[in-house]
Image (cartoon, rainbow, N blue to C red; front, top):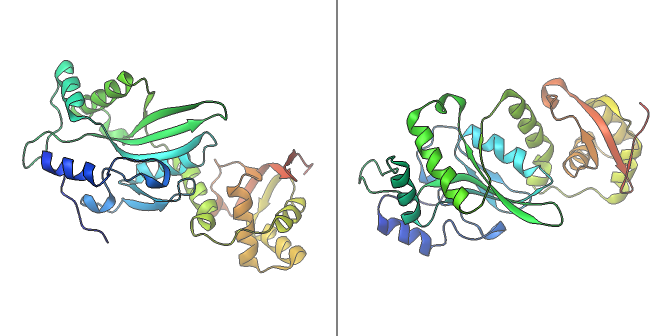
Length: 274
């Protein structure tokens, strides 16, 4: 594991920038803060990104939840976590204008480089835009100090013309995130992608409506001639690639079932009578 970096003084910040932390896009981006740079409380994690092809660093359960939701969104084409608000002089000026204390290192008392949890690059196929997101637990949002720091972030992004949002994790968010984590794990682990022939044959075996995972895998195994494990991997790829659209609000692993709403065969969306 890479060593923990200190981010306490101006010299530390200059060194981090020289090493390209907080810079780049896509696979070249290096988050300003990594998992190993902070004292873990058991909820941080490293997630292999599908869209970026790099490892993403999330520092809380809430951040991991948001990451899965954001990455599965069709409009999101890049995710940069722990994005630094640079230059430092701008966030200092904003804090002064808002008449609030700028965050400082608790030991050196020097002002620190603030970060926004996520900077998303989005596209609708015609235009590209950015959205900044801070992730905060519900219980912390009522605190005065949290509000002050969020205000600094909000104004910083407003000055750049970037929409700014605060994400609060709900039970529904958790269910959808866990479902996405489950159905994308084969792609994250870089399992071999099923052939187009197997994909199309599998989709013709399905119908819109509620189905048990065990039943689907059994049919795939028998009709395509693969193992049950490979059948489950095939199903996950179809879900991850959105060739099969399901209701993500229903807990998949807990129920052992999926609710299919749409099946795309030969690139064309088709609705089957259940």
